[in-house]
Image 1 (cartoon, rainbow, N blue to C red):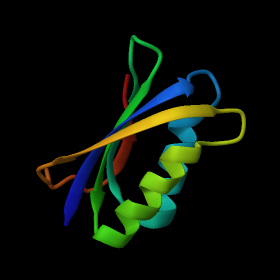
Image 2 (image 1 turned 60 degrees about the vertical axis):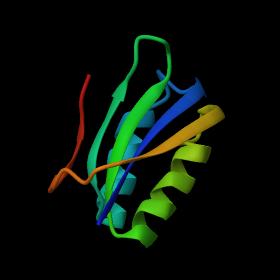
Image 3 (image 1 turned 60 degrees about the horizontal axis):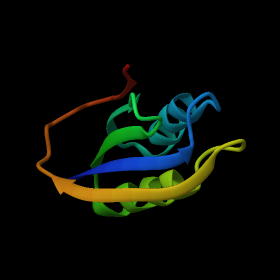
Length: 89
């Protein structure tokens, strides 16, 4: 299991980004969370097998229809043992 934090910058709030991310996470079988940040970015942590996390990170780099992703910053974090994917804040 691996875990990655991603911060997505651009026009990413108010376009269904978090709920689309939850759908994609369920489809891929990854756990973690996603939230809006006060600075207008979307932040998430994704945990799962390496291949599924890689596909989810590719999705974050594109976002759902209506989003304009300008930059996605990815960093490694320690696995937390999450079992589901949730929308917070």
